[in-house]
Length: 341
Image (cartoon, rainbow, N blue to C red; front, side):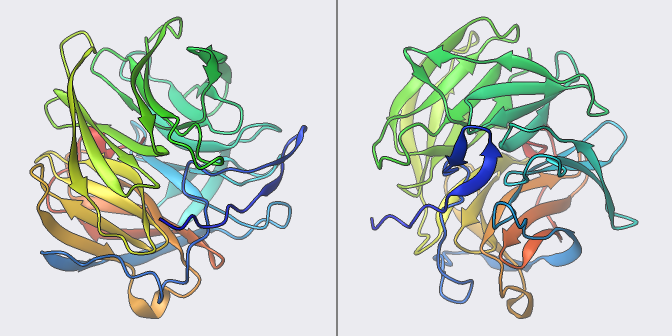
């Protein structure tokens, strides 16, 4: 596969220029050019809810990710490329179509967000520095939950998922910038003390989510456009692994993954403002698309959060036109696996 150029992000760390690649910041073609395979199923037209961000002068881009509902029903998102001093975590009021800053700092490049079922804190993956950071639900009390090497190599954590006990499962996009299959799936215990590699030799793993019954993990590989399934035992150990879905993306690449109450997979696409929806057996059920008249300047639909217990879904969409929130009606209800990550 021809590798798309990686766009450097200026000013995201005091150390200098950082190339953020694991969350799908590689630049694809325009929306009109990036035709992902339609597959079987129907087209779901998403409708614009609000514009959340504009392109940052310092970094030259904006990229919304990690939508997650809090206990009060507010929707939080992260802006991966926000520079120091500008909001890196935002809380949205979708009814009033307003946003406000929740957290910023001078260091992190956060690519996902999810609330822990164990301690109720908001966990963020810092792709650039290899850290997992947690915040109080109101955005205060920042803590470094995990930092350092795993089996001799620092992570590039992209997305995360929690099991029922609060242990973390992280897609580590290590090796993407070199074009090498060095990526991993890493399990971190809920105390942040022990990290275990569950799968390695992966091509820029990105999305990760438990299935509806917590029996295993779905994860996507950005540069191979495939979704794999990792079956686990009751202690989080690997039982088996296989390729589950090969995504016909064309210029688009597989980004984040969410799973609804029926076990359907929502595969975000980078290179096209759309998502592919599959059932648990790999059948293409639908393609969620931004209307063509609104797609100009939008290059990715990174992730989705489905209202817990409801079917209203909110998709983060970004590109040179800015960062937007789009909504659609999902085929099934939202659960933890379709709320953050």
